[in-house]
Length: 87
Image 1 (tube, rainbow, N blue to C red):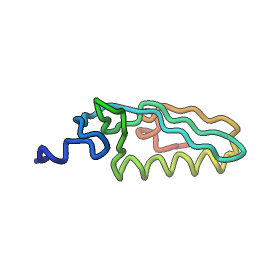
Image 2: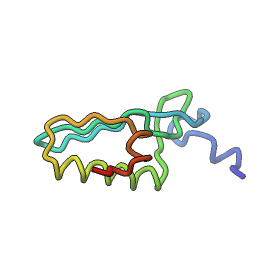
Image 3: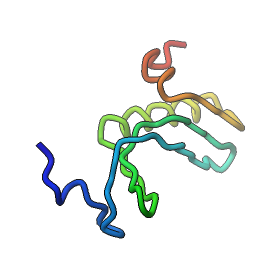
Image 4: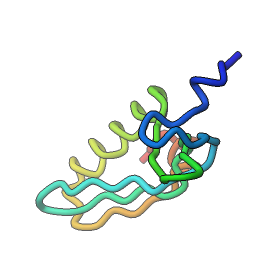
């Protein structure tokens, strides 16, 4: 069970709640955009936190896009996490 303290934003002391965010990475030769990534988001200042499992999945998505040498790669997180980049 989360304590009251862990549900508070360390930046502004607002409250965090589960939501989603857009994750972007500039690879130098291209950009990766992953939409609808689950995250805790501060309701007051908008600061975002992504859990370890989601971060690992995002790393795999970025590695895959880098291997394709995509100039622009735009994906939905829910679709990618289910397929685990089967192609």
